[in-house]
Amino acid sequence: MEYLFQKVSYLKGLADGLGIDESTKEGKLLMAIVETLEEFAEVMEEVVEDQIDLEEYVNFIDEDLADVEDDVYGDEEDFYFDEDFDFDDFDDCCDDEGCNCYKGHDEDEELFEDEDSDEDSDEE
Image (cartoon, rainbow, N blue to C red; front, top):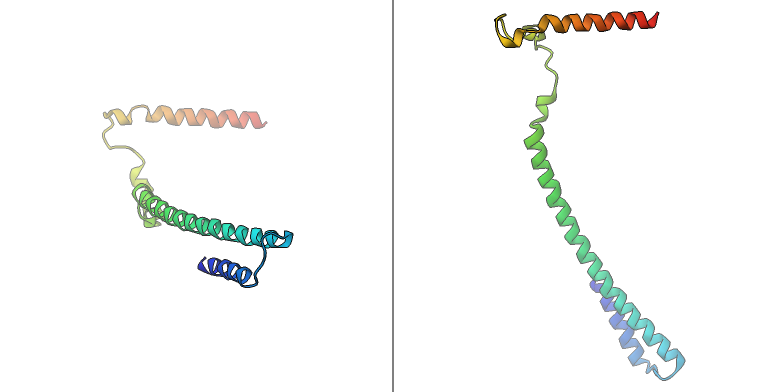
């Protein structure tokens, strides 16, 4: 952004060197243009500084989000399907039929069978 300030300074020096008279209409116009360019350069410098600050802030947020994702989801390896895993080992919650978790297991199967038979009769 420094080059903008250098160019504006050059234009100011050029206007002073040419002896532009600010009392004429053209002189007023040229000096107003140079001053406006200087203000634009200042605003552009502020915008660039703000953009740099925002970029740093977004990078911090991205890093924090990555940490949260690691905490919540763990490693990506946890999400891959293990073809050697045997689901049949986990059909029942436990081997003890007197346990509370085993109760109602047969009722659930009957419920599913009833739903299946209702769907079959609806299709006909």
